[in-house]
Image (tube, rainbow, N blue to C red):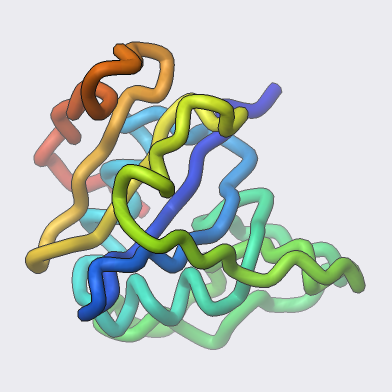
Amino acid sequence: MGTRSRIGIQLADESILSAYHHSDGYPEWLGRILRTHYNSKELAAELIDGGDMSSCWSEECWTNEEIIPGVKGVGPQKYGPQYYSQRGENYPPRLDTDLCEYLLPDNSEEFAYVFRNGQWVCYNMNQFDDSKLPEIVEITSTALAV
């Protein structure tokens, strides 16, 4: 069962480049993974550049090969993104003009993440009031073991 989410990075012109993330999108897992393993603008951009994914941090990939030889800043390991492109599907990143467009209430994701000003911010898309942006949810600050 998936907890759908969207992972985005705010660009210099205020637009948001993002990718869909299917599994375990709640802040206690995905938020902590993003803060622990994708904690710079470069790492966040590299993650999103791969497009839509099943998971951003998995031991498995669609081809049963090592996903990546290592993740920058973490060291050699076989954890990494499980992109739909690895199984031959074409789901590139989405570009929204600004934060409001990125957080439109008609998206199907339950959580939306944005890397901006050097940190990750999580929005609960189920707590949406048409008159304002969705509620910001705290991401647990402790790192995960993997």
